[in-house]
Image 1 (tube, helix red, strand yellow):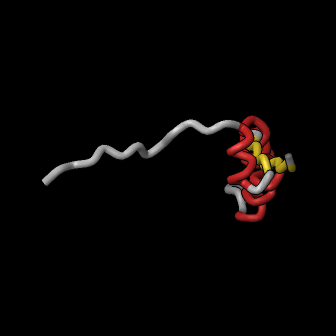
Image 2: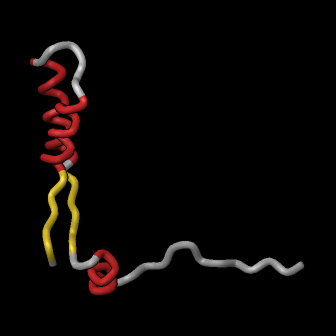
Length: 66
């Protein structure tokens, strides 16, 4: 039995990436996300609600069309 080596990941150009993603670029602002969660933890009620976590996530995700 012969085993084939297949490449799982290969580098692609920015143009190929835009084609695959449908021309949408997504960026995640980790410091902003952690700031909102930290502020909610320090200044809010004990524990964060799912709505507060969702707000932090939606604020941190930035979508731009190419």
